[in-house]
Length: 160
Image (tube, rainbow, N blue to C red; front, side, top):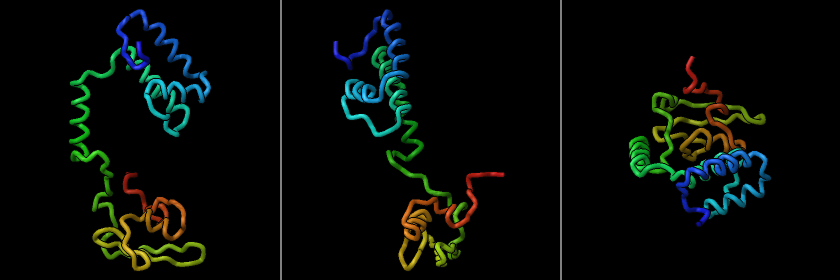
């Protein structure tokens, strides 16, 4: 039987539990080897905890058969409903959360004053358009910043 073939023998429950328990003490290189066997691809460069949880799910999925086709179809439908059918849609801040168009945001950075203007489509800094405040903050500092934090704006997601 292939390592990727599901089993239906209820007697395998003990071996599944043993494999799950062993994940906690398995060295990381061996976890990565298990990933290659169970998923047929290179493991992602994520932390050990992520590898353990995904391997645990995959071991159970192979032993018990995974999600029913109806459940998979329902999850796909819900995902499309949430993101408009686009798999990698990034939610933008609501217009109500953005500063009013024309607002100038000023920040002093390393002794230099920097001004950014809110435009209808995003932001303008040093005569160039930017889609996000984070992109402006990166242009100023050369490192990744949360633009709202960089310019001292409150987080609209945090409610009193």
